[in-house]
Image (cartoon, rainbow, N blue to C red; front, top):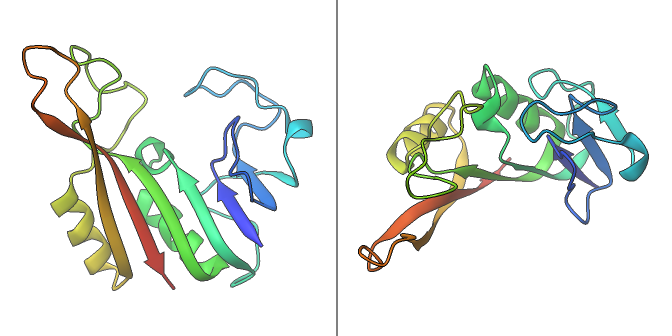
Length: 157
């Protein structure tokens, strides 16, 4: 079984259980009504307090969630608690922008860099693999720059 935490309007295609705090409401982050009838096994819950038993999911997936939370460490430890083998996290790099001239999204409470993420995961004694995804700078003048975009993390429980 696969758990998607903070699934929003687009849950992982193979998830069997989907958690979001805003099911039945308009999400303040993505400004979309999250219809629980459109996802498989929806659970309205806070990622920092998952209402699930320990070690019941083979894999947990979460994309673009941790940067919105008050306590991302608490949410990550909850994911570790309910997962048997692997957690896949995707978080935006601190240089992420929707447009090159824009500021970081105002809904983000946290801004992650690779060194910071490594220190964080090491402090929690987690086994992980980290991959940095880059994309070209969206300007003709600086087209040779490849800026960090996403940090993909696989955590092995």
